[in-house]
Length: 52
Length: 242
Length: 218
Image 1 (tube, rainbow over the protein chains, first blue to last red):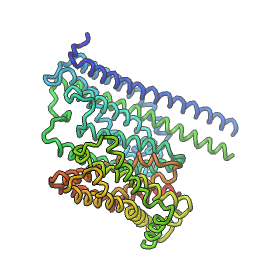
Image 2 (image 1 turned 120 degrees about the vertical axis):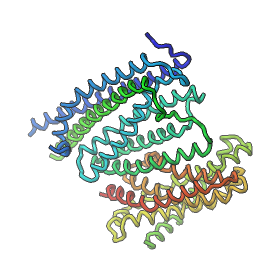
Image 3 (image 1 turned 180 degrees about the horizontal axis):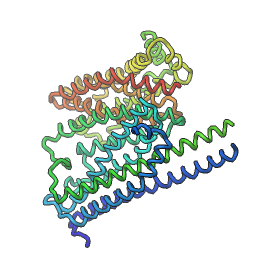
Image 4 (image 1 turned 90 degrees about the horizontal axis):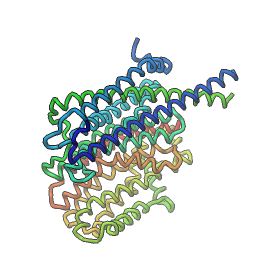
């Protein structure tokens, strides 16, 4: 299944590995920050509504 | 309904929520299809061997690195002229995506060049220009982080984006002069414009589409985050004053 | 405008004004280079133009915080912003004062330091010319960086991160001109590019500098 990458196997795999890791990190951190922001806003809005 | 109505944060968030699921799914699909097709189902290049497969990462990320900055430039101008907060926040949101794209372009570019050049880094004009772009991104992001007041930060970073854009173009010419001028006829650059054969071209297009859609999805999501953070901050300030 | 210039110059030349620190830094960096790359004369001769350009650039960079920080702290900047003199002109004058007190001395000191690095004979003239044409750009670009970060506590490092990439075109053409001169080649192309960049920057950057300064003084 894996294509014969020949002598460049290390290079190609490193390139793909590094890129995918960077993209996954970017998306994961984005979602984490987004979820925190939503939670924080929900909390404050509830507080404001409660306290008028 | 004009595009400007989405300058309203609530309208923007509503539209964003409607559009994002499709964007995420499509981008994931294009990325998977493009990369799998390119990695597993394309032949090696005569000269470059299997390293040509890096093209499916390098070209799309490099394109997005530049387009992200360009989008930041446009949204910064819109902020400076029309004072729409969503625009300023969109620029802020795009920067980290752009910097990661630049980093991917740099890493894949260096790795791609290594078998040809024999070193892990060479001061090829294109790679060097991307390195400089990387530094511009870092400065821009650092400036946003360093300033307390959101409106001041938006103003300062917008002007920086403008000035940076001019100097980025200047640097491009300077770097081309700098490397070409010294090494006559060196064919170091990974020529993106060389005619890419059809068999490589179509998976490349799909990969590019995947990166573009990913960029859009990420920026929409991140802008939403920035809008929420801004609103939370405003509410907190009001709380403290009351 | 003249009054502002004289004021800035006299402040810089007074004791504690920091005049001479840029020169001293330039000297120290130049001295450190042979320690880091080894003392072989041929090597030093080939890197001398670039190293001297880099040293001058860094010396300029490090003296930038004096441009605005002190005036910001004691409220002079607010006065300047409301004065009849346009802020763009004030920023140009400040950059000029910075050049006279920092850039110009570096230009004059460079040939002396060139001796330390075995700069080839024909290189001296072009080194001075390229620095003379390029250092004004460094002052004006630096003024923009200073205005951008004037309100930030300990913003020096951030200012360097922002300003140094902006210095790249000037550095590339300036060092290339100096290098070509040292190798007895024709330096006119990089010199012209350098002069063009300096002219453009001097004409246009004060507008950006004034704009960001106004934002920071709000």
